[in-house]
Length: 397
Ligand SMILES: *Cc1c(COP(=O)(O)O)cnc(C)c1O
Image (cartoon, rainbow, N blue to C red; front, side, top):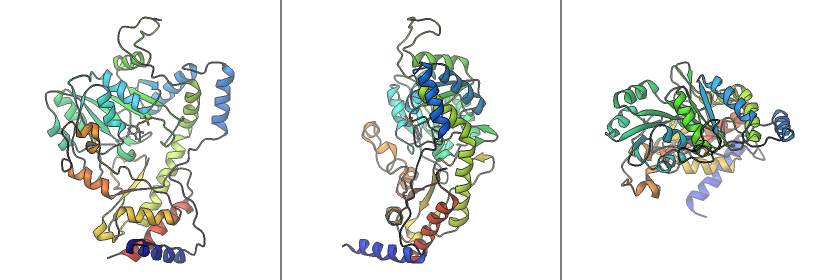
């Protein structure tokens, strides 16, 4: 056994002792919250005989547009395709540049490549880890066609600054809101904060239909363009009239019927997330070397993730060490994300290297996401926090 492993074994035993737990509970990062409503909705769709895109997709789009406070919502098969279609509808293509963050899920920047364009990364804000408007400004060139912001972990970006930047440069402003269902910025919901918003309903998101996606916009032309792209470029109502290359990005009625149930539950599910986050804030705030997510006026965080930062020199243990100890105590955690995007081969080959975005790179070594979803009761969240406090007390330098 290595010295580190021996130290961790000893720590685990003493934390278990302190918490008076013979056996650790099992606390998962995610569990989709579906129930009888979803089952009933799916079986109604099966009975209807319309399984592919049909009336349930239309109802889901209507309800989602109303929820976000936009004119139009167009459902697609997943969030990645929502981004791809939105970028194409924004005029992004061969030779264009899209300014975006290097600290996100890889789909954000992959969608730019899928559109044939070049992702131009700019560093993140050191506190929120969202794309920093000033860094984004210095990444803009005459070829910039769009700015693609990501509301990371469910925290809306500073959209006033991004709207000004988009206006000054003539770029389209696209929100990757795949983690931000129901998040708010000065009273407006994510998806209504730029020219177009893109959502995912993947199984781990704040609301799910297994796989699914949505584009939201007030721009009628953009909405019809995405609707065409979703169906092989077919004109609305013009069967077999295809004026441009399109794809099959359709959502099924089976999925949409689940999505409708989940949308109805979203405010309650987000409420539980917020309550769980408040427990962490209270119990973890002020621990040396552990930074909790900052609270900001005018911002409603959707807490898709509750992500803390571990500063090893102050905390006394590095992020990975804490994650291993928590696993030993029955607590699953996540790392969002272990590598900044510019380091992956498909972006690195565009000329990026380590050192280009120091704030994103540092974050990738320090972030740790704690379980916060609506599948958790307050007692479970309190257990996670107690584990961390007991570890912190013992490792503090
Ligand atoms: C989940 C996610 C996506 C992709 O959505 P899929 O439905 O999995 O394709 C894109 N961007 C971000 C930030 C995400 O979290």
